[in-house]
Length: 475
Image 1 (cartoon, one colour):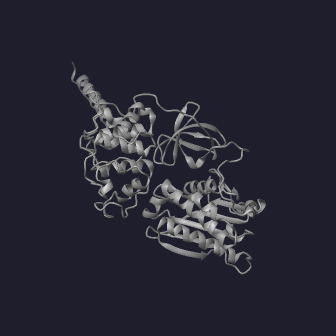
Image 2: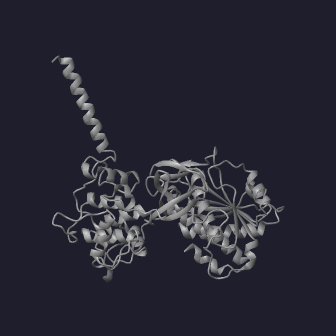
Image 3: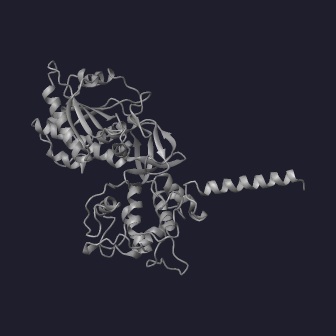
């Protein structure tokens, strides 16, 4: 064989091997076995799994309780902010203290784990297959009889886990990082399961246009298509605040904030049990997510202001729809609305309160939450606007625990041109890494939405309306 031909064959073999390795290392890890490659890459793509170094996942290492709870917490987008826990052996300095306490609050960690009832978590204790089954069953809401065997059966029936070579589940055996990743990926996304076990039994409708349907339950996962507004979809299980849905031949995850359980024109059954002030039905709240369409707003770390404020605004909208208030949005999808058109919309729809939602931008060191109102003497709504801004600011700083930049006067067009009490909330600085982390988080967007909702209630309560029965909606 000629030397040139040998060279070409060697080159092609090298390229082929390089391509194989590239695929196997798509998550950046060099030590992931091919049998778990798809699941680890999937979780890595959603920011759920991370290696012990830039290139090592350590798949054969036993997973600890701390690591397991962290992965579940990331998957469900629980509050991971480091804080005090109920366990004497988990201090605020533990990187996973937030996820551990959130898992207690969500009843993912229960007395079925040894030590928990005595106030000990044993954070470095290796997780057994039985404990894994209980934690995943709790995290994903599977009904079982409170025993390890019951949880194991739920996972096996769904094709999430299987038995060992001995014919048993092996509940007392420790579980490796790779296997835990596989079981978690299967619990999240049924396409990885060993059997078809998903049922799309919920009837839902989309409430936003150009809605992304994603491969996983967060915006970190890739979009695999778009859904129009007011489209009927079939829903299956929830993962945190995301729902696994099917539309046509496409399956994937959509944020629950963009879905509703009733079609247009159908009254929502989700009304508060108590009777709030009947006059609230005559009050219209205008929600104004800033920017949109060709106007992205401020951008920081790849995050666009228009996306953050729309997502948050839709969450507020969903809360208010469960009350007697009427609620209107200047935009409920990614479209451009001019500054002048926003107050015009509010006036046309006979709004009684106007809340504009934004994210700030400045130097990397600037941070915190602030709320504005229009304080010109010619504005007959100065007092009420300041009251509204104060109530929203108080709730936001309590919810997000960011630097309190206070309530300020601002000469913004959406405030100045309005004829009703109006406030503009700057959630945080998109150009500050710490603030940005909260702005992009579905968990913290939900917290902000609840805070603004509660701030609106506080305003109405201060004005003498009976709203006490509506506070529970934000729980």
